[in-house]
Image (cartoon, rainbow, N blue to C red):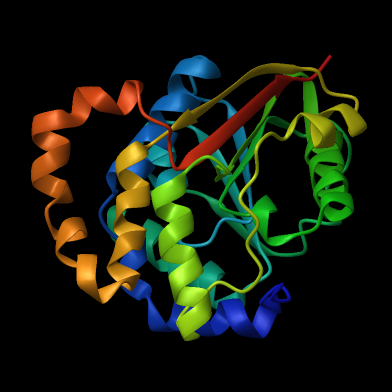
Length: 244
């Protein structure tokens, strides 16, 4: 399996893809909805996005009144998210640091979450990441992860093809059937785990030339068939636990 990209790889990725800090995708909207509905009202609450990338979901939450802190290993990701916050008039704090060792004391944040992060690490490192997330989360707060789901077969097909052709841009990425072992190792009992964002996995078919037309139709399909998203395996596995 490919090694993780590391700081240099993610710096290059975010430098080449600044447009990803813009408009929310359907999957982003689904992530936002989960945070709002599962974790309760977010206004005035402190949120840490651990491995924040473009930070566009945190930016929306900041505009809605949440106190957001973004941490990422990539300098380029931090610069990109800081600039997108500035352009939208959103307030947040930004810090380049490793998610394996946060520069925060215990019990600092109401909600600690990440999207598209833990799948880039092996099982033992995932346990360390969730353990750090739990450490900085307050009692009664929420720890939430979003990771590609092992049952998202369209995503896996596109990923498999791209890896064979050498066009996969994300380094090691392991789709996961569950995150419960990692949460249990951190002393957390999973309160809820399900999948979201079926249409998000369709976009990965664009790696395959013969079916490249399908992702171009997803906007139309989502608008007309969006209700099916509730009944089809999602792209993201969502795992959430309330500390204490």
